[in-house]
Length: 233
Image (cartoon, rainbow, N blue to C red; front, side, top):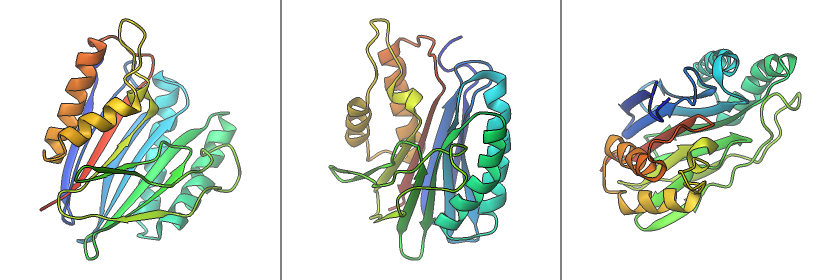
C-alpha cells in the first residue's frame, strides 16, 4: 500500500487559531486519530492519539477512545480533569482488551492566546515562535497501563500571531526510506522552522510532501499522523 493510501484530512479555523491535520494508516485502517473540538466561541480542544498496534483491532479501540475524548471534551472542563476522566473511562476498556494508547490534549483559549497541553505517554508538542523552538514539558503514563492518570502538570505557552504548534505520532519521525534511515525529529523541526510562514494547511502539506520525498512513498510499518495549529495574524 502506498504511504498516503486511506489518508484522512481535517482542517478548522476557530477561536482565532487555524488547525490542519492528516492521518495515514499503515493498513486499510489504523490506530492513530486526531480531532478538533470547538467549545463555545473562544476555546478549541485538539487531540491526537495512538492505540497500540495497527489494522482493524487497533481501529476499533481507536474509535472507542475518540468517542470518549469527544464526550469528556464536551463537558468543557479543565484539561487535567478531562484527561483524568478519559483515562478512567478509556483506560478501563483498554486494560480489558490488554491494550494501551498514548494521547496528547491541547486547549487553546482565544481571550488570552494561551495554549495548554497535557500528555499520556505521547510525544510532546513542538512550539515554534519565529526561529525559536520550544518542546512543551509534558509527560505521562499511557492510557490503559494504570488505573489513574499519572503525569506532569499541564504546560502552557502564550502564542503570538503566526506562532505554530505541531503534534505528531511516532510513526512520522520513525518512517523509513529504502536505506533504512528514519525521517527523524530533527528533520521535522527543520522543515517546520523553514516554512512556519505558511498557513496551517500549507505547512501540513509541505511536511507530508517532504516525508514522501524522503521515504519515496515506501510502505510504512506504522500509522503516520500530523497536526498543525497556528495562531492567526
